[in-house]
Length: 82
Image 1 (cartoon, rainbow, N blue to C red):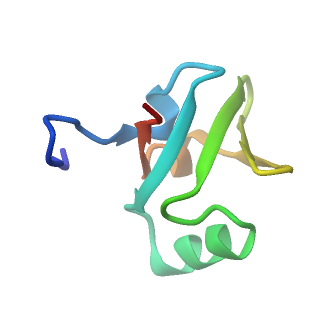
Image 2: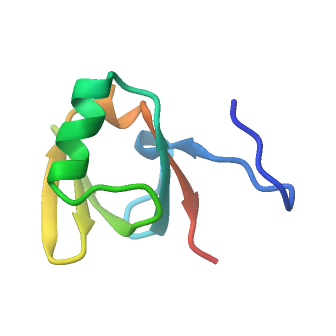
């Protein structure tokens, strides 16, 4: 697991509770997947909110909602926005 200063740890997006405001920290996926996420506005440092965890995770970044499968969501590392 990645470690950060201030005793805070990043965690995978798929473990985030619904409704929590998070900050996207880094991608542990392939370069191609990371590039596609960035093209859609899901970039490191962006604030986002997990809207749903049903068949796919629904992540709201700004005014955009993205459907992300569980496997990819497990490779997106986030921090809660404090």
